[in-house]
Length: 357
Image (cartoon, rainbow, N blue to C red; front, side):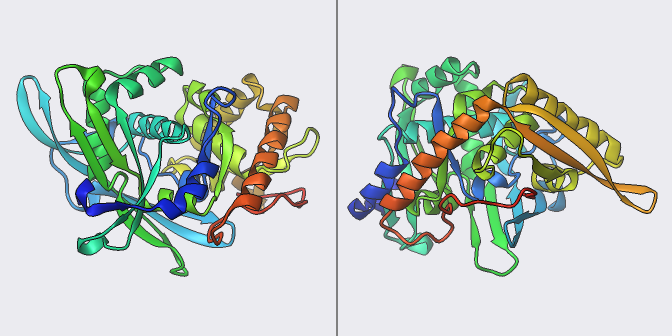
């Protein structure tokens, strides 16, 4: 698919306006996306980052996770790219990892700054499919990464974009109400120039991202804080809390099972205690960064055998105030949205004390 196959959709401008944030007042904020940001789409293990040869099974990973009342199957197929190692060109299989996740977050941040446009494919197998796209330069990504404390070279940024363009993400619900499969960036164009500041580029986001934006199924969150976390699973957990913990208040715990976190984000360790230690570290990170006031862990048993762990999270005053502000924004968006809310964020309501996500 080429950009010439896309036709702008002016009727979706209201939805894109709702996705926008004030570039000055909200410079550290972006939007989390319903379902899309709650599914573990990235592989963080360095061992599997580049594969010079692999079987079909080794070039795809699948996670089964739950979202509200739906069971989701999330599959990612590795990109096949050419890279230079030791002066020799080599084709390798690559799964999107932390670098690709961060660069996608940066592009979505740029999309909140009155930059995104809606399109509809007019030809081929994608005819009729809607996409949200954004034009940018590599320099803009580089500078935004630097602003939020991250550092990737132009070559690393370009490689990440190519990986996202060639790696396929499939999200399917077991009841078949959701069935979307496409590259993370179905369309990408990079006009290389000698001056990197002028290297114009364009991408379209995954159809799930488009659906979420055009149905206003997103919530504001502190994007700069998310990128401060060095531990990848802390960043993912923080995003989930920002999106799902809409009743955060001091003294009212939010309950999360360790098994739920594992199934959503990673392959389990053979020893449950390793995962327990990992996510205990995640919660310590969140306490240190004033997201949680404290947390408690209790074992879930069958007889004398521990089969799971229950985390009870207590919000800090800072995080509770942020969630309250985000709720006001979310309810304003839902009140202004002109489209059916297929996967929309619900208006804020009272919820039970114990919540599993």
